[in-house]
Image (cartoon, rainbow, N blue to C red):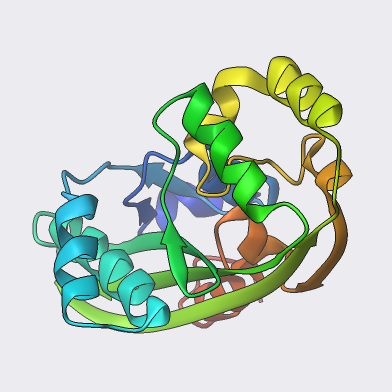
Length: 206
């Protein structure tokens, strides 16, 4: 039944190359296809930080930019853009470029509380028709250097795809003493709110 509906309805287009976001949509049985936009996220972040934009606005702006980039060539479909930012002690952290940077980032977050803001914007006809920013607060426990080195050795390159250099759903829970807020936003997408919107548009079953 789900496969039939995905054929007869206008599909959702995920404007992201994130495997984690695609997995969330797959697991929720949402019909969609992927079209990855070419967006210079670093330049956008630097420009908005120079203007002292709040982290929430940065995540939202990047999500909208990605959705608009794809929606321009897919005017008849719903296009979902998403972005996530990590804030700790008023500093934004980006995805680590390599294992040494991943280790340094986890050391910086160790024993502290940080926030994850996961923005999602849906465009239709090139215009935003829905948006939401989910938030979670996570407190890392004061783990030992030995534990950190073992964690990095076990998970390796997969950590470079995440803004926090951890995957909560894949062993990353061992890093934390407390997680508050939306679990799906930790994974990169405010899924429940998105599903609510998609049901109003007939993409998901009511």
